[in-house]
Image 1 (tube, one colour):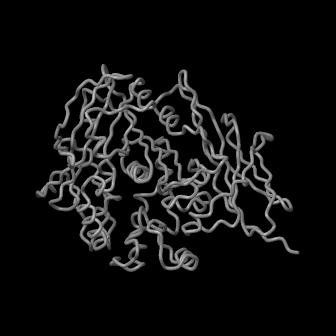
Image 2 (tube, one colour):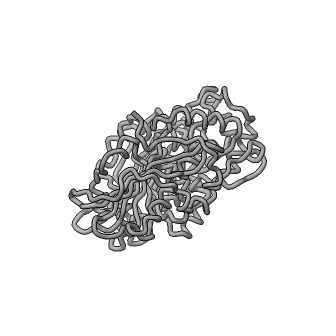
Image 3 (cartoon, one colour):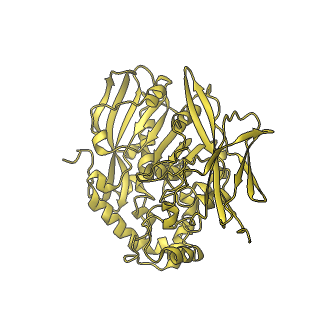
Length: 480
């Protein structure tokens, strides 16, 4: 049976939220905001349906919990979107800010109480609440028909409001914040940190661009950069098709998710129109287009793109053009059942430490992105990574791969970093240094390093890691 709180009502409800879909002509010719933020923040339109009202839940940390469904908005005129929201606060006091995630499924949300992870227990002890909602494919929520209709409408209109990645998922998270802030007896206005992977990494990364109530995002295996492939650059596509042929992986080359029509047969638009759409809405979806404004807001960010991921398939471009965006690259990881490199970090606790450092003043800061230098010296490549003074980094380890296929290609996903291609780095004059003996037959080399810092909160220690910018260097093959 479908959970009772997942239902969609076909009534004329447009005036309630005020976010009007664009016509196909408007979407093709004008840049119209995807979100009406005044409407998103309007708690009077939530139309809250209480599934379980505030009640005490005993456990390692006693809490009060409430489960509701809310009116998010309209997918299109007459098609209401409702989603569940669960709120958790300390039992005897208000929460001062909260952690928000959409990484739940309907079955989890329909349980009588939320089971708390160790980091959630720690947050609650520190007066930080929890807010959960559902950001999943509609088919996973028993709503596959609506998801299919959404795709059909988008492929006809190129209206971002019609596609769940651009509107429904981010709007769900933003309206969940409105829901929590309306519970004034249980929440104080404070920081809102988000975390998640895949669609639950992409969604908060987009939402935080638009909603200044959000203060931190930790996202994995999800888009970060506005690379040429994501902008449907003709030259980039030509190179990929020369290597892989016309059949594409459904995600490699997608703007902000799967390619528009995975096999190309149902696309209703020319490449020129797809390019125009991608460029028109790039500022709305990519962290790389918004770094300056996010930093002015003091937003905390950390990304785990994976080194072999079919969603974050452009790390070479990202490392070159946005080296100051903080990333952690766990070697040979990404979507799917990939086996991490044998020298990859087994003890990484980035997400927990990120949340603790964001919410609590007594936690030491995490590492910030370092600079990297490299210099060829005969048959070797000397690499030097430097952090700001007194950063507290404790270690350095480097990985490399020769002649890796380019970003966005199938080979990019399948060719792993060889087991032997890693080394521990040494500290010299304040920098982490490694010397790589080059393969004389190689035409290029890709490399990055990871660095540990241990974060302490009360009696516990958390091991965090940050990467240097992913770097590609062209080499000249040695001549006989």
